[in-house]
Length: 619
Image 1 (tube, rainbow, N blue to C red):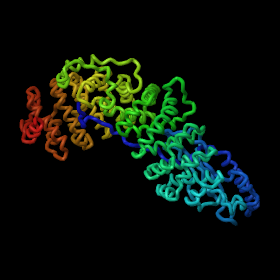
Image 2 (tube, rainbow, N blue to C red):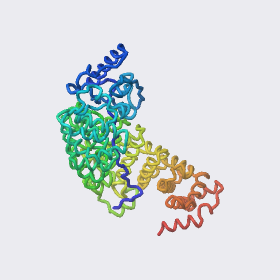
Image 3 (cartoon, rainbow, N blue to C red):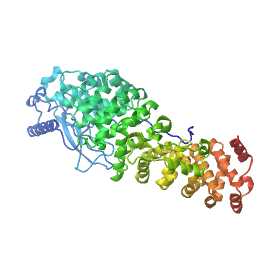
Image 4 (spheres, rainbow, N blue to C red):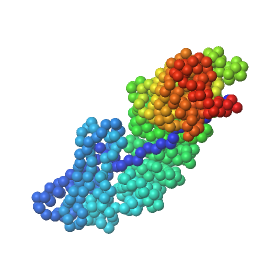
């Protein structure tokens, strides 16, 4: 039993989590507020005296962290609405003898209900305005040295990471986080300065704020930077991240660590190790509890963004090799939890929840070559018909095969991948989701399940078309403006059309969209050779299978477009497929009469090009 590469798909690429700036929201942390209050008080005093003030009036920074401007532990949730911002201005001095001037600006939200479009973007407005803790030599000079450190460099920030003072460690990590968010080149600079190893070491800090800042910095450092991913792994960052992800009580740290794992999982060299280390931890500690698949768990302590990053990590890992897919299929509770989460989102009218996309992409990848890699999924399917009759694909064979298939009422584990309840979840998403990536993953999963030419494909095709009525959701996708989605949907339809007993019902649902697409020329299918070739093959099969229905969709415009495509050898597959359609339209007597009534000559259907392509198929 072979797989036709035209109709088999895996096609879920590696993706990465985003990098983040210093997070905050419309409330300042207690330390930040104390700094702001003291600066405002001193500024008012300075204004009354109409002159400069002495830094000796300020509290010694060595006695309190209130002068150090650190990110808040709060972060706003993502949404699709746009936020509006106000500003809170911190006053800084530019030199020892000058008075305070407007400097660092902290962006804040102006109302409680506003939110962010692309993750939290509130941060200290520029690197040059960030303050740093004083050096040992200048600790006694007061607030001046704390608030006017505009010349801080990455080299100094990296040195701060090894300072025994935790305030310095946190500030160094925060500065690296912010700098690498704004400047891609700074990531390599941190690597060359040896900053990654001490950041990994700070993950085990006894101070939560230090761990949070270090994890955020590492998350940014590995975003789209392959060398840094490998460096973090070599420094033991993978094990540290997994350990503290499950032990820390800080939600922000959990979010950063999960994002770090997601970003690292896009490196092919690390997939095997991350799968071995992270799969059981992420499944047991995040995926299963958050999805509420197990009644003994709850998701009260898991933030939705942690689940999102965890599924993103597993999405990348599911792109790996056969052995890795096998381990994921056999992971206790993983598939059950993913299906449960997607089904609950559909039931709650949230099909475009961002984590749904990751879940369906994982399921899509786990269906790849399922029949070959996990034959136990089909162990209850024992046909007794002659193998040759099955390969012929006769209608009686189709019906007999489907009558042999018996399903458990409640699927468990890998059984979900072939169960009608799992297929129904994909179809529900096709009818309700708006995100093209989610729709493409659903079509891809169904495409994989129908890829082989044999009993399993016949059974799955019957489930999709006849048992669950899936054509009404699949057909509209053939005209999607998204080339990737259109191609996947077309390949799925190509798989389904091979089952002879369903060709008549498919002709009713599919031919209207196919005829429109092929009549519109190559642009209607984004000039994709593969998509156009599949469309021609399906059109030919369905028209020949049901000539009564097929005649209704044969138009002069359609034939002309097929003739143009037949002569266009820029599209090698599609031109040959178009030639076969034309040749067969004339060879079929009932269809020949139809095209003659349209006033079309035989030479348009049977000519040197179409005859040659027809003969090549016979060979």
